[in-house]
Length: 321
Ligand code: GLU
Image (cartoon, rainbow, N blue to C red; front, side, top):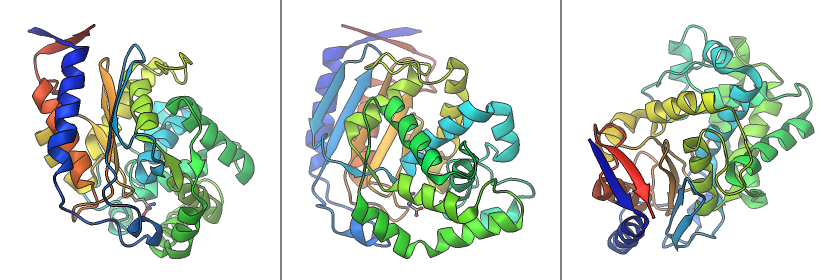
C-alpha cells in the first residue's frame, strides 16, 4: 500500500494543528528548575523539516528554549559515532527502564549498565564517554560541535538556566556517584555531570530541532547544510532508542497514540523522527504531570494522525511537491 501526500497538505495540517492546539491551556511550567518556571507559558512553535531541506515554521520557532533531555539524543549520536553501536549497547544499553527520567531505582535494578543513553543515568555516562577523556573543555567543544552539525547551526548556552540547574541538581549528583560506585562511568563523575547539566541548558529553537530530527531521518546527512554528520548505519539504532524510551515511563502510550518516535524535554520541546520522511519539533512550556509539554504533544499527534504517516502503518508514504 502506497500513499502520496503533498507539501501543501503538510503545511495546511501543520497550520490547522497550530490553531487548534493553541487554545489548549492545560499543564504547568517545570517547577523544579527555577529558570523554567518563569518562561512565558504562552509561547508555542511548530517546525517541520523535509528531506529536501524545506522547512515549515509556524508560531514561536525562533525562541531559544532549554533543550533539556532532547540533548540526550544528540550526545548519544556522538557516543555512537565514537564507539560504535555494539560498544554502546554493551556500556550503556538500549532498553527502556520503564521508570522516570531521573530514577535511582533503575540503576539499582540493572546489573551491568544504565539501560539507555536517553535517561539521566545513561546520558551522564554518554557524557563521560565523549572523547578526549579527562579534558572537560575539549569534551564540551565536541558536544557543542556535534549538536551544531546535527542541528545545522550552533545552540547557545543559557547561563541563567545552567546556574539554575547546577544549583538544584542534587538527584543527578547522586546518580553520577552511584554510577561511579558501580564502575559504570568512564570519566570523572563531577565532570560528566557538569557536561550533562550544561548540554541540558543549551538554548535551541524548534527549527533547529526539526533539522536535527531530519538529519536522523535522512541517514545522517543534514538536509539543510548537506553535511554528512554520521554514518547511515546509525539511523536505526538512534531511532530505536528514541522509540523505546523517548517519553520515559509513558513511551508506550506515546507510541500507541502518536505513531512517531519522539524525544521530549522538560524545557517544553519535543523532537520527532520519521525516517525517510521528515523531522518535526514542537515547543510550549506547560507540562503534564509526567513532565511532557501538553501543547507540543497535542500538535505532533494532530499532524501525524491527520496526515496518516504513522511509522507502524503498512501504508508507505511518499511526499511530492
Ligand atoms: N536537565 C533535566 C534533568 O536532568 C532534564 C530532564 C528532562 O528534560 O527530562 O533533570
